[in-house]
Length: 125
Image 1 (cartoon, rainbow, N blue to C red):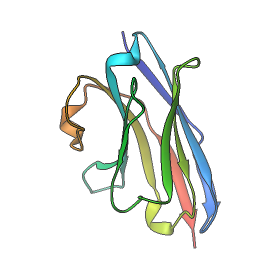
Image 2 (tube, rainbow, N blue to C red):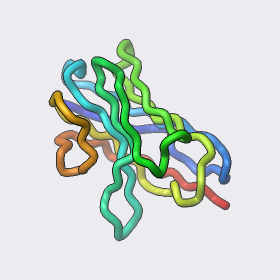
Image 3 (cartoon, rainbow, N blue to C red):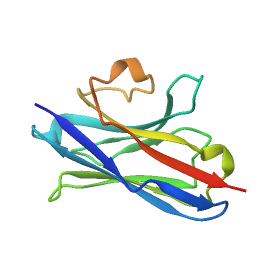
Image 4 (tube, helix red, strand yellow):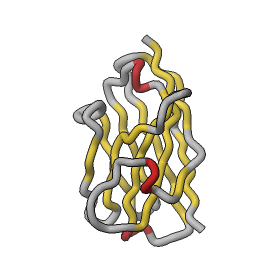
């Protein structure tokens, strides 16, 4: 059974950096897409970034492009989200998601089967 466990959230100031980790287990992830989403209360879960595990190709939401970097470590079965130049509007619960599929990148949360429990990121102004 696929399990995803996020870590690395916390309280930072605007302009700071933070790295989130998503430890993955229960499958061979070479055929998966791994994504990060975020959610604030009362709003729909929002796409942040996605990576194809095998090829390492990536895609980002416009709101984070140039500031956030998604990557993976094959040996550790871990996906990372490096977040730089953080803004108060980046405050949210960040979720790791996985879907076993090829083809186009998915940006809708409904396309992902496996989810972590989330980690809170709070950016103060």
